[in-house]
Image 1 (cartoon, rainbow, N blue to C red):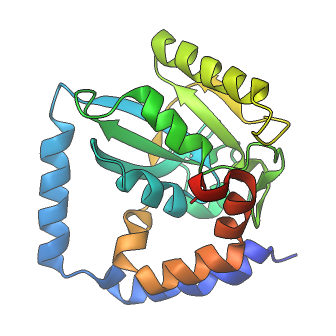
Image 2: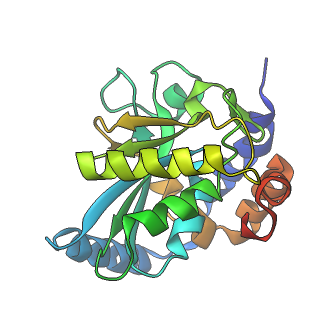
Length: 218
């Protein structure tokens, strides 16, 4: 059976691939060089979050001051170098996720956790929004014990908050190997704004987040 996600997304990917994702070769090369320079900075830290479609998660974190590099990809599975088709079919155990490189002098991990919670449906154990299956499960993947403690504290605070949605089923898991997704997935919301907006609205993401989190939801 063809999933709702594939009905929405198949044309978007095909269009983005045919159009070269809306960027010239020069623009792509400059962006890659800038990203490489940022990745080389030793003062940056890494955080990894899963909240359904990585296009949407990337947009949310790109808007946060102090977040300098975001990479859509896959984490938590058993197959090395998985492809998008493998992951989206639920064949590898991975989930779509976002790797965030941030400057701790500009933004704290606690702030990133706040952004995460307000961009996820933490009550949904079967996927996120129109994206169903464990490959779209939500979760926080900590890279060290400090992050684990902060993530667990943030989850406990939500569980104790009478105004927060319940139950909180998003998992907190130690990060395993993160595999970057294919190039056409990176910065999708910037390269293909019309296609991205169509997907996000059709998937019901914005409406559900507003229902869960009010004005804080994206």
